[in-house]
Length: 96
Image (cartoon, rainbow, N blue to C red; front, side, top):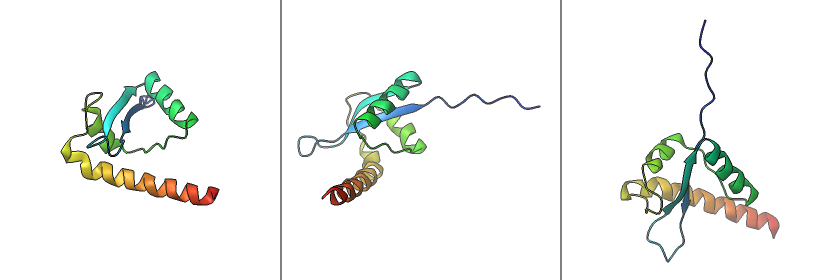
């Protein structure tokens, strides 16, 4: 008989990148459990894109609030930002 698995405790890290004022994206929120659920609900309410990437989450979770992401994560986050940019452009084209 196997033990019942508890559902995974949700975790989130939120980034902000305000070009040209900032050199790199910053960690602006992070949390787990109920706080993570609240942050995800706020993102959904305000149409903030959400990306699920466990590996990137692990790395970003090590950053302190307010910190710029480390140089080693620039490429991974740049890929994410490019994907979000394409999504935003597609949504804008649909609404035009």
